[in-house]
Length: 86
Image 1 (cartoon, helix red, strand yellow):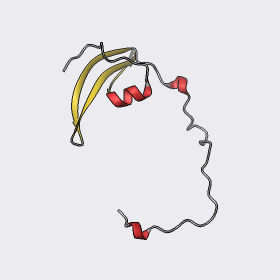
Image 2 (tube, helix red, strand yellow):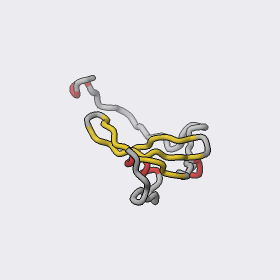
Image 3 (cartoon, one colour):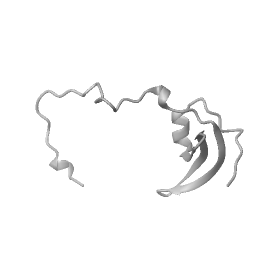
Image 4 (tube, one colour):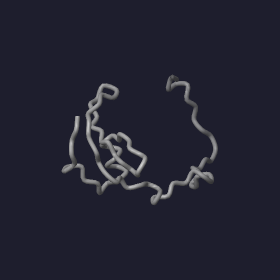
């Protein structure tokens, strides 16, 4: 932790790097659409209740995803009519 008074004004001309180094690029087609929503649950994270969904991404990969993350990655996904197991 640091105090705001310890910050110093930057002097000079700075610009943000527009391109990522090789190997850090993410292609949109790399994101696999979920094959199936298998279950949902609620968990407590940092004092907040978070809804999670069990997502099957491919034949061997199933993972719990926070609802907010899932919707941000796949905005067209509909979770309203999915089966719920707690």
